[in-house]
Amino acid sequence: MEISKIMIVDDNEPDQFYARIIVRKFNENIEVIPAFDGKQALELLSDSDCNPEIIFLDINMPGMDGHDFLKKYSALSENPGVVVMLSTSKEERDRLTIEQFDCVRMHLVKPMKKEYLEMLSAENF
Image 1 (tube, rainbow, N blue to C red):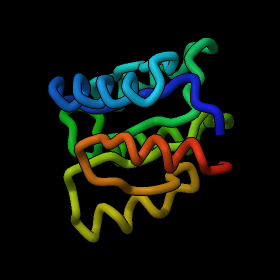
Image 2: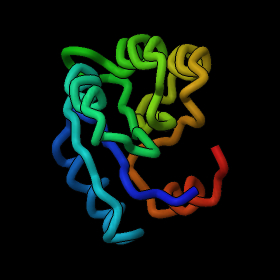
Image 3: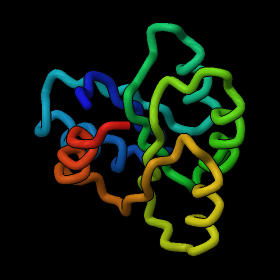
Image 4: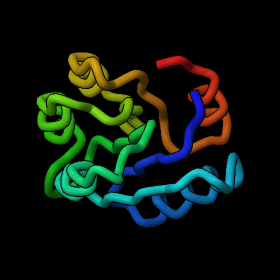
């Protein structure tokens, strides 16, 4: 899959910053769209110009968390991108909850790694 846009949904600014650095090291031409909670992510995704191929989503965030985002996102008639959970959570209940959503392709552990992007770019979703 060719990746041209990635959305990173995470309330933690240092994690956002680090993820952007890793994305730029992987490919400086990838546009990174930051969102700091699920509500902001949904607002950005409602714009027709915002069509990321991959959405990296944290689970635990104030406001609209990752679980609530997935409920609303999966109800949309058109999901513009696949979701990859990128979280520090290793809780079994979190993994089981996110597996209910077809848009979630995998669950990876923070921090973002270049290998994650290499693996995703080799996938055919």
